[in-house]
Image (cartoon, rainbow, N blue to C red; front, side, top):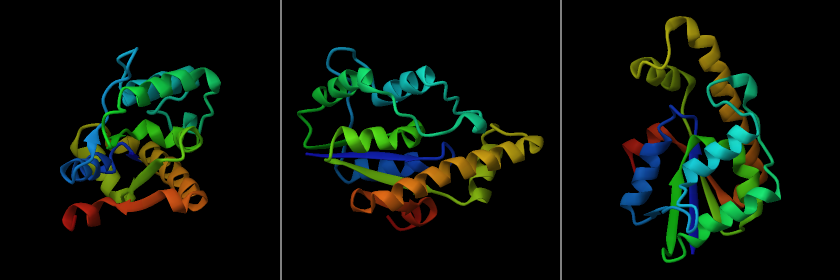
Amino acid sequence: MNIVITTGHPYSGFQSVHTLLIEAGLAQAGVSKREGMSATEFHGRVLSAQGVDLTMPASLAPVTPGRVWDNLAADLFLGNLEAPDWGWADPGAVWLLDFWSQFDPQIRFVLVYASPDFVVGEMLRQGALSADGVPQAMASWVAYHTELLRFFHRHRDRCILVDFTAATSMP
């Protein structure tokens, strides 16, 4: 069984890279067995409990949720036992990379990056940013990409670093 977590800055195009993986045969992660919770909901609960606000660059930092969250993560895995290769995409996973790497050695990571001008441009195009919010957007880009690189350099055997533009132009 292969488990793939795809993550990156919310405006990096990580979801498009995950879609390419789904089209290549990766099953989209289902919900947890008991709770009926998706991986994205799991991340949201953990990050909220740890005081991480994905919209505030100052609060962005890796979190160590503790053992209490292991049961919910295990429940998510139980809900997906039937799929030989499965995974999910979520920007919140950036802050839980260490948790997932310790949770199961079978997990592989697709870390998607994009240039700062691409990310800021996407934010402007999608109406998530006004011109006076560019410094905060840049701080967010730096926080996400710093964490992606930190994790990648420590876990090269389990990660692939993917340029969104290259991946979508030449899958």
